[in-house]
Image (tube, rainbow, N blue to C red; front, side, top):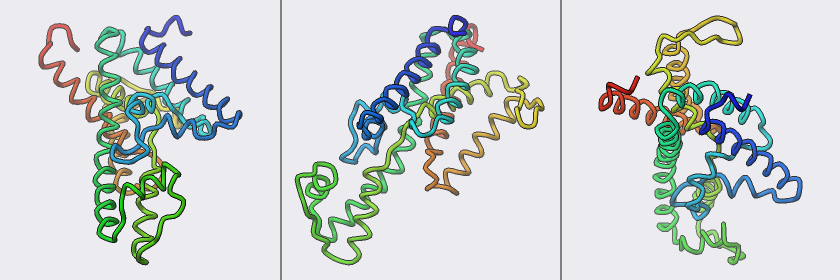
Length: 250
């Protein structure tokens, strides 16, 4: 099976699976924070590290096998097809551009919220360097609560600091969006019920659903904004490439 998968897609699949296996063994060995370190966090949170921009795209929760299975299935199905028609270089650039674009959109909203919480906490008398050290550094043993209102602000800020995003879904949504733009009338077969649906309707409906969930279900532990961000980058890149390279591009 692996011999029939193009080289970039195959390596992305292998890396994702290997990271998943390493995390499972790591957790069983007592390294429970491994998924947290490999996931990405808001850029202006003390828990963010630059390497997370890459590692989060290969990190899936060890407790949710459906997440990685579904993502890898879509990667092989749609990624293989796009890599064959684009070639490995363009496909590689596209995949990571979509993943990073998903991260940027997800982070942009959260960064604004964190900034607002920091401003509110400083207005209550907090030193944010001390707060961040207390939450993440561990050297500050006790943090005084200055007012009743500040407790609520502190709890909200703490939740944002330890919020994380992981998974290949942002890049995968870019692949889905690209396929729908390039091959809108291709018939895709649903599993339940087993009926054919054109790509533009099935994938377009899926993306529209993610847009809706981004605003209606912000606390369901799914980064819907990241999915939307990956799809947006995918559509924009395909339209740009198709415009500047009409001879060699679908």
